[in-house]
Image 1 (cartoon, helix red, strand yellow):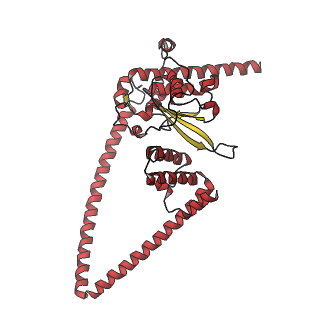
Image 2 (spheres, rainbow, N blue to C red; image 1 turned 135 degrees about the vertical axis):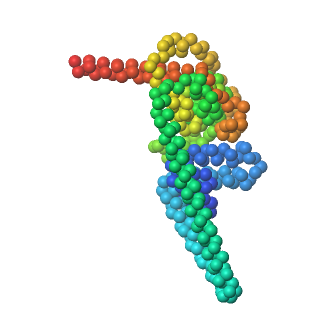
Image 3 (spheres, rainbow, N blue to C red; image 1 turned 45 degrees about the horizontal axis):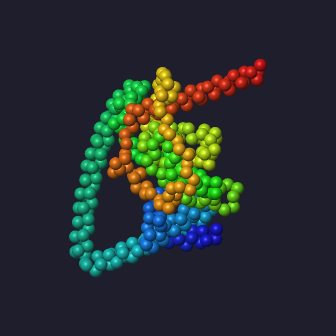
Length: 370
């Protein structure tokens, strides 16, 4: 703790700028920025580059400082004091520069001074006219834009209740890898030492074909524990968004029922939030999906092979996250009509189970009152 306080008070680098976050960023935003930046400067990817490795360690210090509220407050106060000192120095420098220029103007004589003043007055008048014309042009453009938005809004209101179709959605939803990625974590200990990339792939292939597995080790502060505990953050990139949606939907329940999955926690989407396509399909509630159970039951399940203990490459190589930027990767997929149908069926099944649970609870309450 004393070392962190020392770093917070005497840091020469701007930790927020180093992580690429705003000083008002939340703890989760700081954590995401650290994970993303740390991948770029990880020692395993930059062997023989001492300056890059040094920056990686500085990133770790920055994350530790900004993650502790008390130390972060010390750092913010010290940073604010440094910024105020720089502002004062800049003001003093500006004042000295102005005095120097004023002295030169005085030494140049009265004639030069009058000429300069006349030129400045002319420049000011030209700039004033230009700003007035530019303001009039901007007001006109804004008025035209508002009129266009009002017309478009009236058209959209007539289409709000129209349910999106797969044909309409498909061209506009290019599924980047981040939209087909889920993330989970599990503790690193003797009980989970067999969970290398091959074992994780084997387990999570039950939801669909897996393109890539990324395992990252980090130490996390667990409530009630004195020291940080090692955890593995696993990013599973699926071939389709339907498979990723099935995993996110079913894993919480499966982890409570099956021993192989009980170690997994913090289940969520790789991007930190639900993809836009999933949110749109969740909002569009079709009146009825007939024979949904038949369609689901007729979908051939993917074979699940038991994870091989001790096999695979484990954590020896950390793949790049560059592919998450999307756009240049050949694996970027488009949500097919089949994917959209499977997502809708999964949502319908979830709503049916929720309704069944509500009915059972209501019946139980009626019986207890009787």
